[in-house]
Image 1 (cartoon, one colour):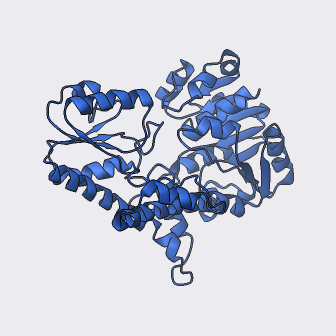
Image 2: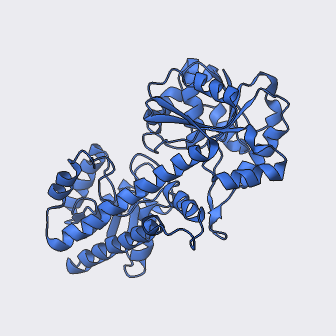
Amino acid sequence: MNIVIIGTGYVGLVTGVGLASHGNFVNFIDLDENKIKDLSSKKITFYEPGLEEYFNDDETFKRMSFSSDYASIEWDNIDIVFVCVQTPNNIETNSVDTKFLESAIKEINNVNNNDLVITVKSTIPPYEIEKVCEKVGMDSSKLTFNPEFLREGTAVEDFFKPDRIVLGGTDTEKLTKLKELYSGFDCEIITTDSISSQLIKYLANTYLPLRLSFVNEATRLIDYSGGNLDDVLKGVGLDNRIGQHYFRPSPSWGGSCFPKDLVEVNNFYDKDKLNLPLISNIINSNDIHADWTSENIKELYESKKLEGVVLIGAAFKEDTDDLRNSPTTEVFKKLKSSIENVVVFDEIINDENIVKFDYLEDLNSPHLFVLMYPVKELTLDRLNKIIEDSNSITYIPWSL
């Protein structure tokens, strides 16, 4: 099929490259001209394991084109357009920011192709997409939805081996074309209405941080009680009703999806008519755990009379360079208010505020090295050598 992908972030680029590798012809649109220049030159603008291999495959790359101009697309020949633009949280209104989505929908609404399947992959509450459509004069019933479930760090694997594919909408012909696109994938395809398709995404992104917050609260209880963290969590996770996936403690959780999606879920309902004590307190539980992590680091630093703190890993999780809502950033801010010598180390992220190996190798006094998440074995070996040479110590918040 002939596909258009609007937006070349994690979702758009991974989806488009994956579809191109399946034999489809994919046209990418992004208003950021620098991104388009980079992609046209075979330069990926973010780090995602495995993506570069597929992107640089000659046959796949021949089936992809890149543009910052909607008018450059031959829309008469396009079967499906996927809207993959960001829908960040607007801090001022504490609600989803729809300006990028509105811009894309407005452009698509000008396309003269009645057979075009317009599919929204961006995460957006049902009531907000209706407002966007009203603004640009589009009938919202024309839209179909295909929420994404790509995890940063494993997005390529998630695309090719999905747990499920969710399609939402009311036009059976357009849903059938989407099912045809995904016919080669070995998983269940759930076809439902528009609202339900979005609720599947939002509630999945509500349960997962709820689960992570439960593990972090359990970690504090185990630590307080003097229990063995690994044994307790293993013993609980081996219950088939619970399982061990997403059952690892952390300094706190973050990322581009969970925080903003939880905010939107809590905007869905009238607090006077519906009481959801679990869902409404997940973010607060995470904030409390970040405070607990920071206090543990501070107490260990002071009790051992160390010279500084090194936070290992700047992103919000391993195998990504995404700094959005990173627990490391939050812990850094909390520590910096009372500890002058605090730095963040990361091997793959280039930023003037992030130190590299050369900085660490020059340390000549004992520091506290805090492993914010697992790192590659070679990196860990090199860090352990630095720690040994400087008489430093290690603290692992997710493995007490």
